[in-house]
Amino acid sequence: MVVRTWVLMATVLGIASCTKPEMREASTAFDLDQVRPFLLRVSRDIERGFDSSTVERVYARIAALPLDSTITDDFTVSFGGRQYPLQLIAFMDDVNSPDLALWTPSPLAEHIDSTMQAFLAQNEE
Image 1 (cartoon, rainbow, N blue to C red):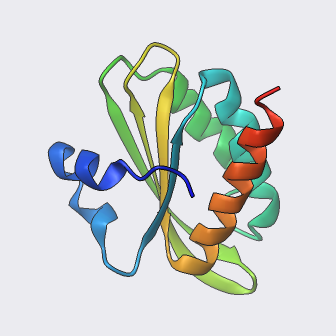
Image 2 (cartoon, one colour):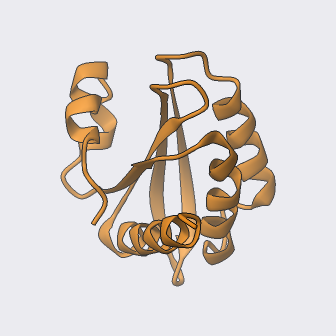
């Protein structure tokens, strides 16, 4: 499982909405050039609410983040025939290396987490 540092980060930054008990987290740090391909991979499995044009808008916001800044985006998405809230938090804690946290209920969070693990393993080479 991905190291979970965002509960503390969310508390420090005052991002209370991402700590809802029914929400689960998938998070890790990315190089900026990995963010778009990862989010596009996630979008392939989401039926509605997080398509490639949404990914491009989110990526543009992340790429423009100044150091030590955060953005939060909330979506309602369809996955596996059900609707889920999805909250994306990006924190630029190092130059061109944002931390991403995606908060959503378990079925989708588990899927995003496994997608993240596969993506990172594939891109380690």
